Image (cartoon, rainbow, N blue to C red; front, side):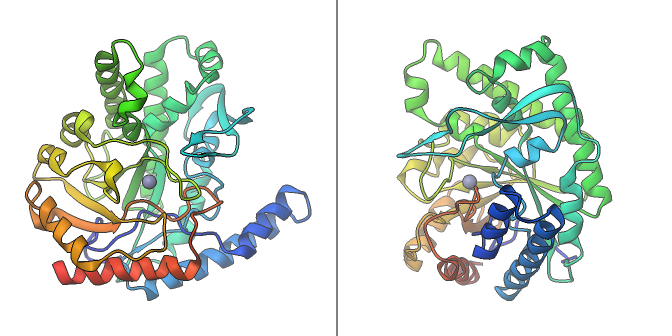
Length: 370
Ligand SMILES: [Zn+2]
């Protein structure tokens, strides 16, 4: 394992474009043309190649690129006992595009024993060396809670969990189990991916609602409590960070707005070591909300976009880093793309080569600044 842990001065969020071999294998498996063993073998091959490329690019973090998942969040949720895979009659509505239709339903008591992602992590861990740290990305606990109440999902959820507090406690306990098992497997870096905060930032989403302000505050505080419950008793040498996401699907986005409405609650209150924040366009607002980031927490500025192959102007990015440094000391700042390259298997609209060029630029800029 590398001597330092995340975040790294040049870093990435975790998901990578799926190679065509892998896409074909997943489609073949879905149609019953190949076995699960065949699929796993191809996934292993492609993940091995990806990790070699991550190392070649000089990064200190390695991930499986989320190659075994179709979604950044649902596949992990399906791995809990007591949660089943369902298909809704429509997907999430992104800006100009609708996603595929997967969702979750409770079918019993939620617990985190024998979560399949622990085995997935072990596969990545074997490649960790003196220059790298193996990272596991998982959706934040609040994201699971939110999905359980997405549209009509809540009707089923309250049948199994009429007591909301019991649900919160069970989700948190299930996460603690998975986190402990990941730690046991050698994991020292977990990243929570969290779209719930992105939605809190979205003025348009809240504008139409009565009592929007109270509702926002109450929901945000509930989500914060749930995430922190899941983090209780975590080992001191396990770095956990949060990536606040505004949605990233086939180069489109879901929510819009600066961090101000949740800055104090989230930056001040969540017991994580740092935040990977999107700042790649005007939808992310200004750096001013970063004034709420305490001195013991780090901020990874997602200033380059994974949504487009266009390479950012180096000087502009460097200027923006120094602007952000008015609110968070430069030493506590880091650089990455704003999000992964393929939050869902469909991926963003850029090529494999363009993806690596983007990461080369992140590293190049970072080395000039720090
Ligand atoms: Zn994201």
